[in-house]
Length: 164
Image (cartoon, rainbow, N blue to C red; front, side, top):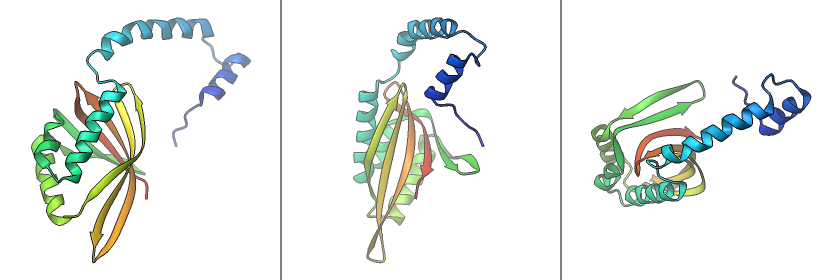
């Protein structure tokens, strides 16, 4: 199991002298990264623009407008399904996405979704989504976490984590 240190735990290690690199060295490295970041960020959508793209994608999904959905995808688009024990490429490319969504909307004609929570960091936007569908006259729903990578206003990658 991979463990990630929280900022608080990391700073406790720094205060206790457990981290070999002095804090000043880390600060100067962060400063250098901050100077480079504006150049890198210029080609990436900011979080507000990212959520606008995701909102357009969601509206197209709810309208079952596959062409509009495909128009939001980068040429090298990939969708990854993340399960507890592995991550797999679910589909790759616009045309594979198009075929998949056409089949999905044919088999689940009442499918719709909404976004419950949002978080954006750099070129990444994470959303908690809730999908709804009907089966046998009964409405079902499932929550999931989707992490979108957006570049130049297009969705390049999606990592999909089912929650329920």
